[in-house]
Picture 1 (cartoon, rainbow, N blue to C red):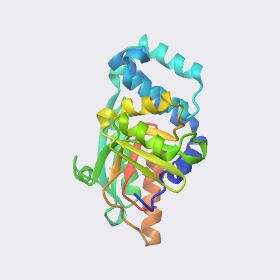
Picture 2: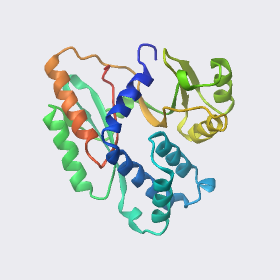
Picture 3: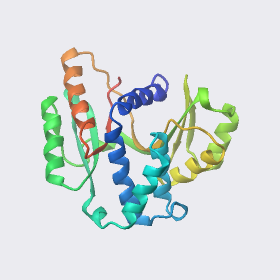
Picture 4: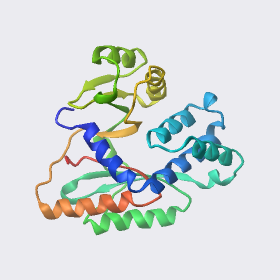
Length: 242
């Protein structure tokens, strides 16, 4: 973990996100719809919806916007048209890329994803071609500057709630969980008023790959930018050591 400042990466993402809040709100809005359809509109009885609401608040989505989204989803039949589709492929120099989407038009999404890979001199592979290089984990990033708790106390709260690992970075703390334990750990930290820069199920690379060729870096960045700009794309994971 050392050498990879998770919080620095998240701050970089948030800066990009702040310039395109409409995109972020669209993604979260779709996640709210699906969560409500799967588990109902009451967050107290729907842990997935609680997780999405926490993500919405972390991205500064207004409470009334969240409430409207839940109410609309509860009375809508549109959620059945959304489906999760994951794409895997390779960027320049064999960089592994996983793209998770939530779409109501899989033909459009597939074409856009393939185009993004092609324009960056990469290619979409078969399901499972790179996912074995990643570990699926719940990941919670806590900025040190905003955390009121000492590191040892924070670690004990996380581990007692079911976390697998706790790491201290230069500017943040990282808590890792099994996917099934993520909600319980996040909620335990939330009850202690611990601020979270990011809290989500993610794909963590087992190893990172460096790129030194400027043309390869430019090509990979083009693919990542095109994917990030696509409203159907929820998450993009890769093993490039930025």
